[in-house]
Length: 142
Image 1 (spheres, helix red, strand yellow):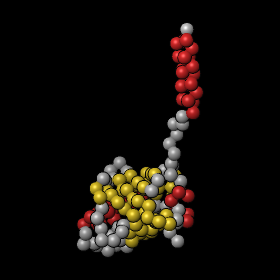
Image 2 (spheres, one colour):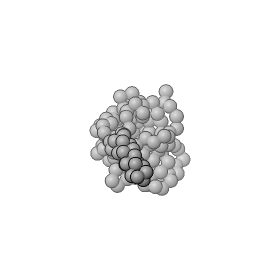
Image 3 (cartoon, helix red, strand yellow):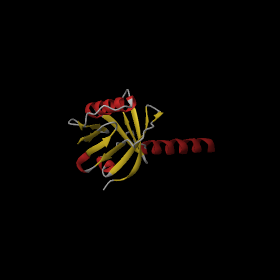
Image 4 (cartoon, helix red, strand yellow):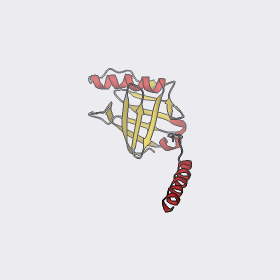
């Protein structure tokens, strides 16, 4: 008889806890990115080595700026965890480093077409089905 009571109590407790679990995904909000600067650490799981820090910064109203080989800037929109920058302006210099030239192209396409954004602690991940860029929080912008 005691085993039945314990089983019923455990079943009831499990059902109550299951009701508390949320299935909705928490998405990154613009306020979490604004006034922060991030430095690129890896691309598709490979560490990035560069003579200069490859940065991505977020300002007011999702103003985005940064650099790979070239400097870029634009106004982004973050909705349901997806970041899009339709009018991304970028300088058009050719770099001696082929990896940086490729990163310019990759980042430009990601931002134009839409990229999933995940901010977990001090790590920012920009990901599409083909590419993943992982940045580390560097500091607050002025």
